[in-house]
Image (cartoon, rainbow, N blue to C red; front, top):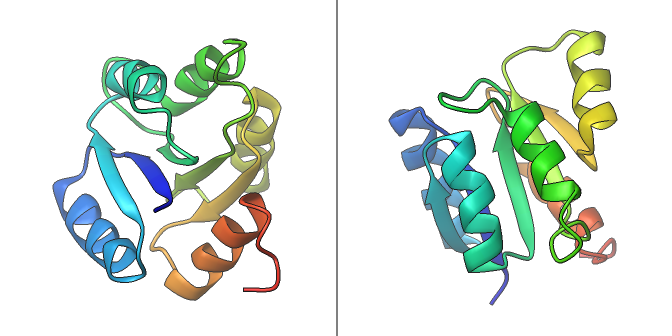
Length: 124
């Protein structure tokens, strides 16, 4: 089963998106701040990370840089999720090491397509 680490501090977002992804067959593990996200990337070894950018303790941009600077973790694809829809936010996420970017509120079909692409299942 594909494991996704979802790094998100908003309980409503966690509840809504994790339930939808679980119904699609994903194993979801949750981190509630950037520091925990970095730690869990190492301990959980997820297949993909969904990274909120506005997080407590350590923001998503910084957490992504930490993950991508770790030789054992740098190949894990990271999709940034943010309510910030401005092009500069997207570019900053990509510059920090994110592999893709999606906006909130999440369009589940669009996100599933991006997840599939990052996992190399583009024909799903």
